[in-house]
Structure formats: structure tokens, C-alpha cells
Amino acid sequence: MTTTLLKDEKIQIINSHNRNLYFSRYNLEIDKLQENAKNSPVAEVITKLNEQISEIDAQIDALNAELVIVNSLTE
Image 1 (cartoon, rainbow, N blue to C red):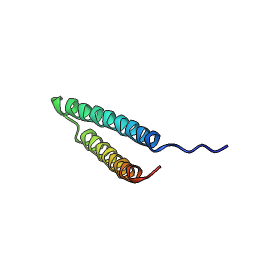
Image 2 (cartoon, rainbow, N blue to C red; image 1 turned 45 degrees about the vertical axis):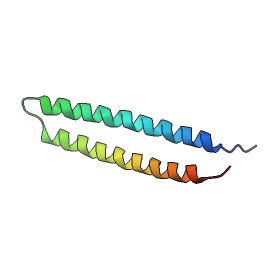
Image 3 (spheres, one colour; image 1 turned 30 degrees about the vertical axis):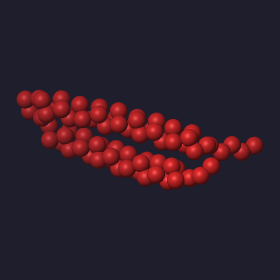
């Protein structure tokens, strides 16, 4: 038995993943804010956080591109 997902189900899954990525991104922004608030922020920590934020941004872009494709599908 094979089950295929409906267009709306695919959209819900992508949106759910996007939402989780936005939560993760915001958490990293808060981490960066906290690090910058220290008397002696560690530049390496800030660099790592910025790298992680960039990776999440790339994942969000990929999901948004997939969302465009899924939205263009006809059922």
C-alpha cells in the first residue's frame, strides 16, 4: 500500500519545519544578544552563532523554494 500526501499536507509539513527553524533562529539571536552583553564577549562564540544563523537562513530559503513548487502543484 502506498500513500501519497495531499498538497495541503505537504504545505503543513513544510510550514511546520519552517516554524521550527524560525524558533531555532530566534534562540540563536538571543544567545548572540547574551554573548554581546557580557563584559568580554568571545568573538569565536559570536562567529559560530552567526554561522549557525546563516545555515538556518539557507534551510529556510530551501523550504520556501519547495513551498513554491508544492503550491504550484495541481491535485
